[in-house]
Amino acid sequence: MEEKESLIEVTQIVQDSLHEFHCAMKLRENLNVKSNTLMIRFSMVALLLLVMAMFYLISALTSNMNDITQRMNQMAVYMENMDKNFGLVVKHTEIMKSSVEGMNQQVRVMNQHIGVMPTLNVAVSNMSQDMRTVSQDVKNMNQQMALIENRIGMMGADVTNMSDQFTALNNSIGSLGNNVKQMTPIKIFPFSK
Image 1 (cartoon, rainbow, N blue to C red):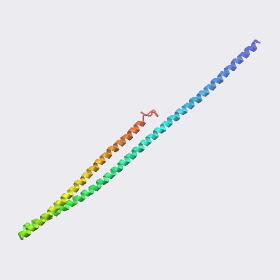
Image 2 (image 1 turned 45 degrees about the vertical axis):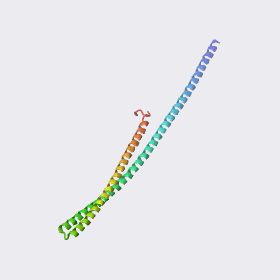
Image 3 (image 1 turned 60 degrees about the vertical axis):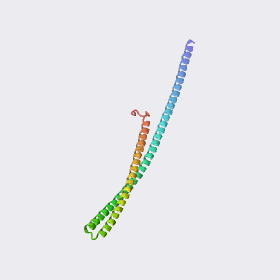
Image 4 (image 1 turned 180 degrees about the vertical axis):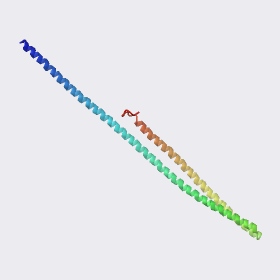
């Protein structure tokens, strides 16, 4: 009978041990599932943060590129204005050249009148007429010089505007560089600094 009782005790001990082992295995399985679920959740949050950061970078890049494009378009307009002004300066220079040639011709005519001097009245009358022509040519030259100075002033304003656009362009590119620099501190890869 003692043997029977000891056999029942051993059986009871083995059964309790198996029950505890089974409970321990269930607990281990539950912990594995929880840790795997937590790992998946953290990975999804990290991936979501990375996607949001990428969208922010793309948005900043797009806005900076739009600003750069607008500045380049304004610079193209200023360059067209400068081209027109150069054309007008050339035109006024040609008019001045023709005025100088007209003055030279009038001086030659005056020299002929002085050299020949058929009569004093005719020579003085012709000289007076030639002086009026020379005066008119000088007046035309002064007008053309004023127009050239005006165009050169407009060209200076265009160059100043272009300089301002280059400054704004540099600021936009610097802002873009700062946006990219702000994105780099995210420690995703072991080689990022």
